[in-house]
Amino acid sequence: MQPKVSIIVPVYNSEKHLDECLESIVNQTLKEIEIICVDDGSEDSSYEKLTEWTKKDSRIKRFKIKHGGTGHAINTGVLLATGKYIGEVDADDFIDEKMYETLYSLAEEHNAEVVKSGYYSYFDKDKDIPCNLFKQNEAYAFKPIDLDYMNRFKVFGFQCSFWSAIYKTTFLKLNGIKWRETPGASFQDTSVIFKVNALVERMVWTGENFYHWRCSEPHTVTSKNYPFAVIGEYHEIERFLEERPRLALKLRYILSRMRFGTYYWNYFRLDGQDRERFCYEAAKDLKRDWDYQDIRYYGETDYTCMHTWMEAPFSFHSIFGEVAHGEDYSNTANGVNDTNK
Image (cartoon, rainbow, N blue to C red; front, top):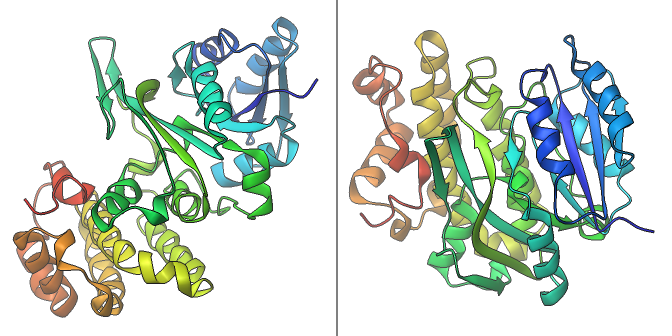
């Protein structure tokens, strides 16, 4: 019998939290699942743990591949998936037991290609912060590209949480939606989520939260190992829109605002020469975006900041270059919450 959901777990040196992650998946109230664990060349005991888990639950399949980054691991999982829908859980996170039953039921009820929930930013059991666009008892079915300009922006600008959703397998495969196979786990879901939102015909978004995104320990995405990875993701989105002029008419302005917010956040997570180099590289992209700006997506301060960075990156870096790493710039980086402040 075909699984209702194939759950992909990319694994890389994840021995610390892997048991908690898999425990939360095997205990799902939706039983008709397959669990595809793709070990991306781990150097710790992760693969041995996976081997033990396959003995406990026949729904778990484990594969070991040469280290190629999260994008390569997830693409491998998608190729191996046999379920009607695909989900993904990072090996250091965990999920609530009703997650996939709820998302699958909504997908079937609404004949949706994508069903997305909110998530929790998990720091510890006493600090598990819910993140969503809607109230918990709300659920909406829509086509993102057809929303009005502000709601469209809110959907596209929301956290790129590929893992808090399920996707119809045929939708991903027929549209050729793949993760970029770049090193590590830095930002690869940025272009994937943009493409999903742009191409999906019917999406359901529920206000319930199920996924616990572990934030108490450093993630690759927030490390400084890949200071320019995000630039490649936005270049990929540009390429995607250049090939689809009709979509570009509705989304090029949103892309520009999203890019500024993300680049701004990335600038302040870096230090020293990486921050300075990123400042000048990012200014080139912001300059190219100048013809695709919608002032309605900006607060006055943000618009001025973006213009300064674009026209005079030296001045921008002179003002902000020595700001201590760790300052809270989340409002501007988010883009959505800062709009029209």
